[in-house]
Length: 312
Image (cartoon, rainbow, N blue to C red; front, side, top):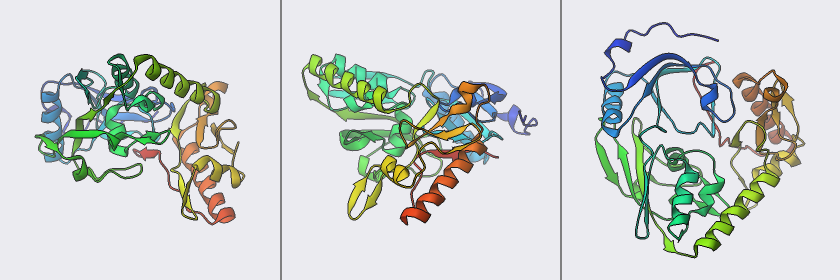
């Protein structure tokens, strides 16, 4: 595995967080590939996070937040700059009346269960989305006809100076699988206005979501979740797996990376089960092959939902 040389800024990082160099990142992702972080910061509160955001922006050092590591592929050379694990100390979830508050590092499933236990409906679909709130906010994650921003009333961010701001949801221009968060800013938390429901009915709804996932998705294999965005064809949105399937790409493989036989919009790390894990390069090559075949056979330019980050 590649190792980063000691950066000249490492000893100047702000006090508070614990910093570690050359941390392998594969195990921090759900797809289980990727090189090391040049530096990883263990941040325990938002004051430390704010200071780190301000310092990195002021010194032109890249800052990469990570929650649960889904929906991302870290390239084999790793990530330059500072990687921050948001899941420790930046993951509060609480309910006040019909309002649910969740911070960026909280797991989506944790937020869904908190709402369920409070007898609130409106975000049960979060139980079927792996990952953390910060990623869900950034990409306006969705499933089963619902999206993250559907019921959001308040959003908090850290700006490039590390200052906390409350912004209106419309400021972030939420769209299908995306938002317009300014460069250098970071999602901190959001509030959802939910409605009272029957706790047992919400539980059944979440159980049905999990049942549907377990029967249709390759949950037994490392993956990043949905690979491509759904496609608009003839004025209608078509599930991406149908497009991949129509192009004849189900089961296609490069090295340890494979288009799932079970769900054609999941790329799985088949090599991990065989003792020869796929690499980020395998997944990027496979994605390019699938995209080219879809373009050639169907005349469709399909967009990735998954995000590649880092250096080759």
